[in-house]
Amino acid sequence: MKDNHCEPMIIDIVLPSVLCLITVATILLYFRLQSRLKTFFHESQLRPHDAAFMVVGMGTMVTIIAFVPQKAILVLYLAAYSFILSMFTYVVSGKWHVAVLPPVAFILSYFYLWNIVLLNIFAVIFAILVSLYLGSLFSWKSVAVFAVLITIVDIIQVYGTGHMSASAEKTLELGLPTLILVPAFPSARVGYLGLGLGDVLLACLLCIQTSQRYGRTTGILAATTIGIVFLVFEITSLNYPLGQSFPATVIVAGGWLAGSGVHSLVKSNRR
Image (cartoon, rainbow, N blue to C red; front, side, top):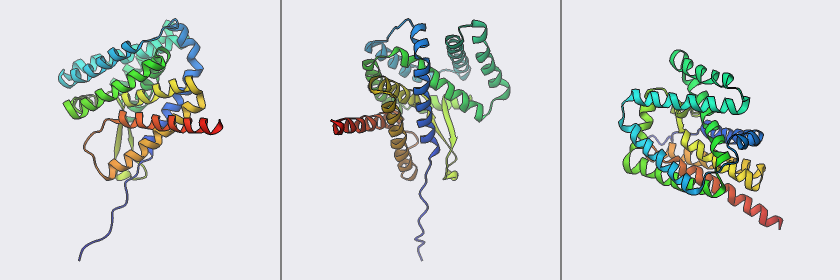
């Protein structure tokens, strides 16, 4: 006799919620620190071709990481993260002796106290800091170019070369905070789910620019629709597997477009 009992649907609300909350927090922090960031960068802005070069550099880095020894990756990441922490602390405090403390805390934590909680804390911090830096430098056109190109590169590196998965595995083996790892809930049997910082960065940049162009409420709306679309996709992929990895930038871009669509509809109805 056949067992017609259906397995319960696998659902996770944690990772989409984390993505949404980080994006909203970044928007709020950006408006709080906008004047300091603009002053620090002397009102400079990256042009669309600068954004294109940045995407090429990021794609190249993914390929390099897939092939270079782990020790080289470790040195590179620790140096880059320490620099980002010190520069942001200096922007906020204006004091170099204070700016030294966060990178020292990060290095000591990594070598002596590291665990999944610290990995997630520093991953979130780095995602927000880089988003704030680039958000203050990018124009609307530059973000549009960045979003389109980074999505294309992500698709190529996931499905074409496979370097995205290889580089993610290497950095994860080293315990570097290059992605956010959270336990699935309510379907705990899934274990931990991960999201790369590049995907978080794209969501934050799109929502920062949306906030600047249409207001903070619209930016938060876009962050919410990104989280909702990500939730729907994640439930679908968990129950009907699409493979080991998927270019999440596609989902982020789709969620942002959904938010922009809602904004346009509301605006047209008001008219």
